[in-house]
Length: 358
Image (cartoon, rainbow, N blue to C red; front, side, top):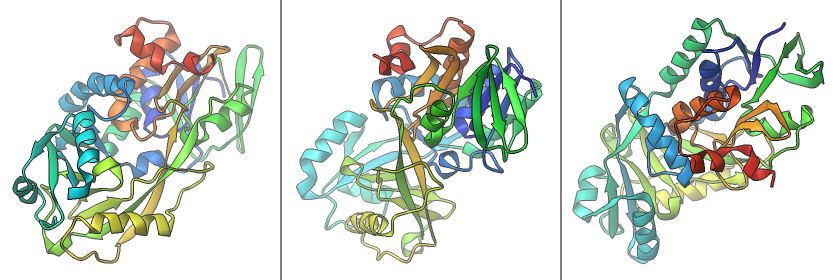
């Protein structure tokens, strides 16, 4: 099967890049699993807060949010940081870094009434944080790709990659595909795909992030609660369909795999959450984990590899995939086709793979 561009990876990075690229080329996206968004994209906290992440990530956030707002993908959530008396220094650091405004303990209790007033000493709030309708966003990108004549192939795990006659040949268990350009949007497997293609890996490492879903504390309705964090992001909790998601915010480096939670890490995170909450913790309804993959400098890797311009990186999202996808996919398409970019040159330089080849 021959096409112009092959995108490997069916998470938000791959499907958004494929949709953008399909505006000017025939694109085929291949995904190892039987469905799109199976790994990190299907296990996301699904929040956008423009001040979250490195400077280049924040630039992508700001360049993405208008599309997300206009498309109706966002709903109000808010973000709150909570701290005990002995966490004042860490609280002040978070307050400055995340651009939140300090509020009173009573205001924090009004937002999240299950917080423990005997433990809570400091709180900060930022209203401009939003839930993202991640499922509809992915579906719309897939619809755009198919509407432009592109193809989505699931259950197609890459077994071999060859370079022949100035084209890439991608071999799966059932077929061989050929294209001039290969886009590596393989998430936790990004370096594995590069190695198969004979391209030097960039040191992209997956990190496990665990999650528990618990019943709404005290039988309350948390629908209007903000997402709330312990200082230093040592844990967080987020309302989810009448329940509460609680994470230890772990970032343990692991090999790429279908992730599962570490019970001890999850228990420790739930204990940190419990110290700030007056309502007793109940047994989790469900637990799971996902992989957040980071380049060494913890920012995205977007654009052609300097050693092989027909090998394009769209990787290292590190948990920022949904909030950056609009601008990140546009940048990947512009760099792939050699078109001007709307982002400042300094931001583009901080995102290109060239920075990791020096």
